[in-house]
Image 1 (cartoon, rainbow, N blue to C red):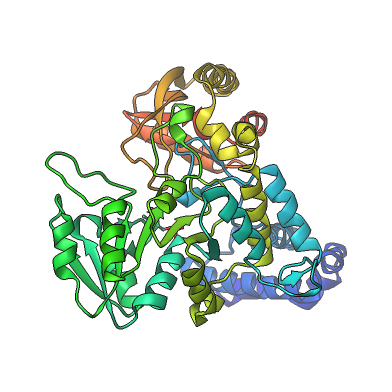
Image 2 (tube, protein in one colour):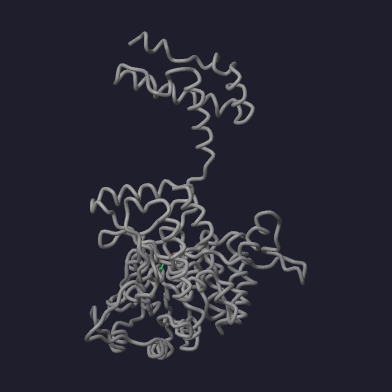
Length: 463
Ligand SMILES: *Cc1c(COP(=O)(O)O)cnc(C)c1O
């Protein structure tokens, strides 16, 4: 064994070889030496267990080539682009909305240059970082003002902490939701230091349930949009209008966590209805919160709109400083919102809406192109078809609504699951991994959620 250890290369000698000094020029001395040390330690562990040299230590050249490979690999960003063929357009695990062109430009400017973030150019004095967006959202939704934070979960936390710390918040039992990734209304309430007062039942809640629960400790009446599930059958819930009337009478603000929060009427595009922010403003809700990267189609953010006096209080709460967005996100969000000033253009300016409204015939043609490209590579082992498919919005929007779509399906000729999974692994190993879904013993590659077909076809060529 000690003979084996002695065969391991010495770092000093390796650094003096031609390849060694080349590596130092490219990657720097410390990175090269650190990786060599780590790999030699792995080699010693390997010898101890296996009583033989590992493959990468057979010769100096093997070792150096291995080190170079590792150095190249550690330059690669692990949060790498993938092709989304899951059919879920806003896939939380794949980063939700793709940014509009103008949002990308605005974000890039903010990265590369200083921006007038908290600086009022007209007045030449200190301004507010949410000011531009606040004015824009006021115009788009009819609300008086807005406050922007890290995400909608943060928005709910900030509203509760600002107005209900140490006090009671009344909510219907039918709205005690859990959203993926551990956002649960009762937990957020606890974190904000407020007491949850549940009223009604899972399927039915009436106005009198709220009214009876109100006492001198009540700080808020909370409505939560049940984004990711539906209660059907014998149901009753209280509308915002009714709740607002009760709140006004008792002098208690009404707030709504709207989840996705659409700024346009999705029915105009043949899509399922999603509650609109404007409708809640009109209903008189005091504060409404929603996400920036769900149906809005922008960066991750939590947007709170509502009455100026309440927004001012949110802006001055210490948590706002903790939860605020940076210049890049705010620039991207502002640019995204500006697109809504020209609503007729949204289907081509906003990638999320573009994907959701793509004509089925277009998807069919794209699927045929993809089928051909795959056929070229995989026809020997797989049956490759174009089939109709059900896509979905994702991110908790309309979980039961299916959006007609088109997919390429791959079925193993052998009928063996392992062949299917081997292909899934092959798809994931591509320079830009292809992510589909498995259903009914087939891989489904749904075209509705694809961001860049040309890039996808190029990637398929690598197979
Ligand atoms: C998605 C969602 C949230 C969480 O929003 P994030 O922006 O993901 O933090 C909270 N409430 C509802 C109703 C939602 O749909």
